[in-house]
Image (tube, rainbow, N blue to C red; front, side, top):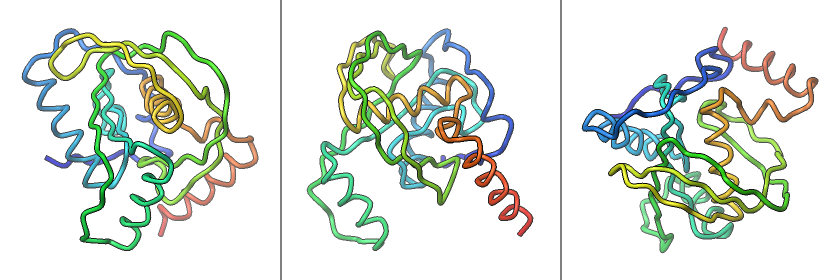
Length: 185
């Protein structure tokens, strides 16, 4: 089931997510619906907060490389029906915690909750994360580059933080004004 995504500046995006107490059938169905929603909206990551479910759950499917990511974006822009050789890696993180970080790099980020807007954000270039998967099994993952960026971006959602919060106050103000004008029509 494809679920509606909250859009900036909706105040519900600022809600801090609660830990999942048990990975039961309800949580498994939510994860399934989150993947369906993420793919339908052509995203590479989605936090439960973005669909107004304030639980510590994140799903993502990040291409292997920057080249694959650019190819994926090009295919989506052209609405290509051709199958590409991009490898898919669906990942689910329940009750995720970043345990180590290193390095820094700036990347252009976008967000399903802030459509038609991208900006450069500086984040750690390498991280280690511990979480539960959709079966309730614990795992540790070492991530770098685009995967590390995506994980940090989505985990921010669980804390009520949006990538636009990393921008200057002036850029935030301009985005808010633009968004309010678009909402009014």
